[in-house]
Length: 226
Image 1 (cartoon, one colour):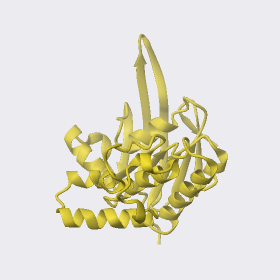
Image 2 (image 1 turned 60 degrees about the vertical axis):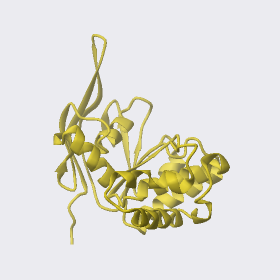
Image 3 (image 1 turned 90 degrees about the vertical axis):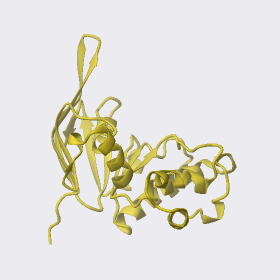
Image 4 (image 1 turned 45 degrees about the vertical axis):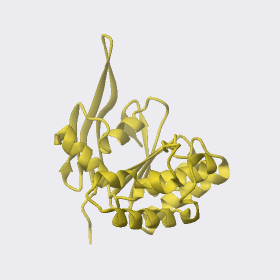
């Protein structure tokens, strides 16, 4: 039975003003992403791949066009509603791990849950489950400086997962990792898509990393090309 796309991008354009010049980052992009897909966005620097990722994730807003995630038009949300929506629907993984140095792995993973109405015991249960999923339950009390780069990125993935989002967005998640750690992270993202049913959208410039996805979209000059 056919399923509705979890992400629907329609005639999406993004224009930035730089001095007296308009710079088109995205030009009337349209694409559907199905539940459970692992979509890779590729293209040269300045092609618009990170801009597309950020607009789908509600970090940036389009100039024109629409982005619907599970039927919700993200561009129509107020700033307050958008912040709530991001916390509920989207998990973020970035090249820099963005962990708080003075907090333990468990405390870093718990941060998104502090914005919810969950009690302390419920939060701890979800944190433990997320750390177990990324294979770091035994490192829960370690601070970031006591973890390897690959372990820090897995903590960041656990933090992205802890609210049980429908969408995981990853912007160059292996950019700061050695080859072994990068492979571990990519295997984890692929497993989250294929086994846990999460929809993953990843930006990368690495063809080897792109091979872990179920589909690749190539952008050039703000447009998706064959």
